[in-house]
Image (cartoon, rainbow, N blue to C red; front, side):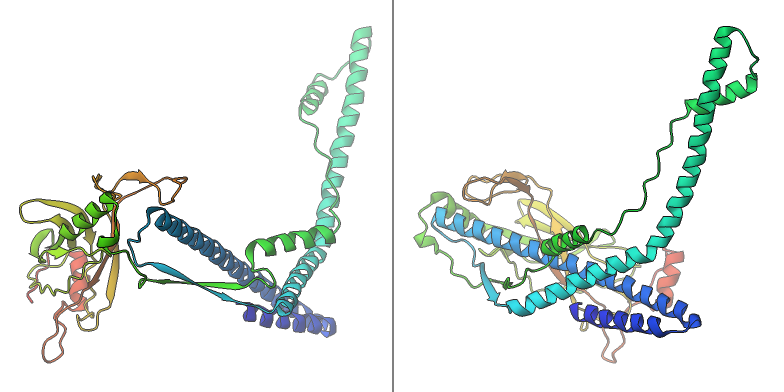
Length: 399
């Protein structure tokens, strides 16, 4: 985006030079081009700055979370997960950064100056019109007040006659609030504008000479083996994890059609299912749902339901991409060991200074598509049937 901005700056400069030498009939066209370039520059710069600010804030949050995790590991004297953060610090050229910083701020300053100059005449005309209108109203009110005072004095002395309608109109006019006197257009304040540009740049952009931080999350860090853990609550938690089993039920059009085998959860909480579930369909596909269930045949607990979109008719299973579906369990779970449970307040900081509430959540990775015959035909309804089904959901087909 920065390179695109530089290109647009150069185009603006070229168009400004063309305007200086252009004939009358060309000036309007060139000014229109210039306005278009400036509008695009503003949009790109704002987008770039917002992205830069988001990245800075995100890196700051990641580093804070990493510090909290290290403090917690140090306090409890054992490590549960293999997560580790690698921080890459890329040194920058302070002279180059300063040059680009000054160039950017100067360009933005000139934009605001040109914008002020271009609107100066229009703002002055607007002020002159408002001021003339105010002068007329002010003069009328002044005249009415003078006349009103004279009428009151005449009435007190019992002389003279009063036009009742004029007196009522005067009363109505004086009852209205005094119009504010228009303020003249402000002069261009160079110091203020430069300060605003500098302040915004410092908030959104990387400062000159500040190193670029790149963070990389790795999962191959060392964990503390159970034999080296002397916290009974943590030992009990690990034992409970090794006994926890998960299986999945698949529902097609709200009817159960198959389920997976029981899978044990690892200490990393990743469950490789590695199963293929072929489904022979005779009714029009309306919904596909996967239930995530904890337990065994005798005692089960529904963790979450994930609705999976029906694949398009041209999506075959061999070419389908793996889709990631987020899920959150609404269960409230309390453990007697060191596990967090679900739906309860907890703190991830060693000093318990920050308390949060969360539920069991995770990701379900699914690859979904239609079967293919040996001849390469995708066994799905043709696109024309999909359109027909939208009009009549009772369409039935066989596969």
